[in-house]
Image 1 (cartoon, one colour):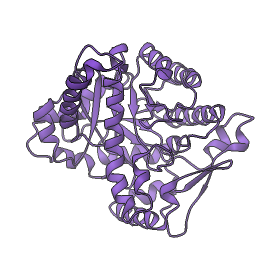
Image 2 (tube, rainbow, N blue to C red):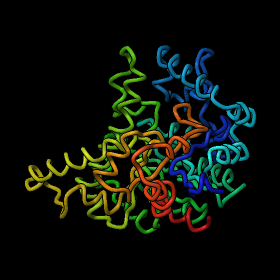
Image 3 (cartoon, rainbow, N blue to C red):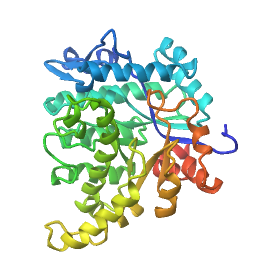
Image 4 (cartoon, rainbow, N blue to C red):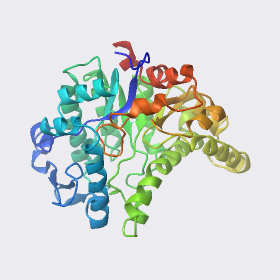
Length: 388
C-alpha cells in the first residue's frame, strides 16, 4: 500500500482496549484488582472513570463540564466517517484497526495503548500490582498484533513505580513478545523525574535491547504532578489543560533527559516525544541551550554538549498531521528528527483525513514529507521497519 506514492508508518496509533482485558489477562493473585470502568450517561463512552481497588483514576472524567466537552468532541469526530460505528460494533478489534489503516493509508503502525497507560497513572499503585497491570496489557497487545504482525507493532507498557520491575518487563516484552519500543512516562511518578539516578537501570536496559522509548502523556491527569491539574476546576479547564499538558510535559521530559545527563550517559538510547505537537521544538532547544550556557557551568550534573546536540543525535518528535507550523520547524531544525502520528481512534485525531491533511501542508517538499512519513520513523523503530 502507498498513500499517493508515499509509504506511511504511523509513530503513534492507539488501541482502544476492552473493559475485560485485565480480568482475562491479569496473573493471580492480582486478578481481584482488575480495573473497572464507569461511564456517565451524558459522557463519551470512550472516556470512562477507572477504579483499581480503592483508587480512582480519571480526574477529567469526574467533572461535568469536562465530560460535556469530551462528549461533544466525540460526537463530532464520529460523524466524520461511518467506520467509527463499525469499530465500536467490533469493539475496536484488530480487523477494524486494519480497516481504519487502509482507509487512512497507513502501511505500518506502532500501537500505543489507551487504557494501558491510564491504569498506571496513579502514584499510589502498589508497585507489584502496577507491574502486573503492565504485563497483562503487553500480553493482550501481543495477541492483538498477532493477526498481522507485519503491519502492527507495539510499544510495551512498563510501570515507573519500581524500576527493577520495569526493567524486567521491558526485557520480557522485547525479547519474548517482539515489542518495538517501550512507553515512557514524561510525568514524575512518586516524585521522581526521569533524570533521577533511580531510573538508570531502565535506560541501561533499553540501550542494551536496542529499542526506543516513546514518551507519551495521558489525558486523565490523575498523577499528582500533572500540568493539567491546575486547571481542573476552572472554567474551560478541559480545553486549557489539554492544550498545555502534552507539549509542556514533553518539553520537560526532554529537558530532563538532555540537561539532566541521561542522554550523555546513554548515547545509544533513542527517544521519541509523541502526541504533543512539534512547534515548540525550535524555541525550546534554543532556550535550553541558553540556560545551559548561563547555569550549566555551576550545575552539579555536567554534560559535554549543548542540550540541542543530544536532540539531534538521539531524539525524534511527532508532528500532528495538520500542524501548520511544521514548515517553520523544518526550516529551523531540519527534517531528520520528525515523525508523524494520526492518533486514531481518539476523538481529537483527524481520521480519516489525517494523512491527506499532512500531504496538503504547504511549503514542505515531497522529499521532506517522505522522510517524515516513513524514513525517520523507520530509523526510530527499526524492528518495525525490518519486517515490513
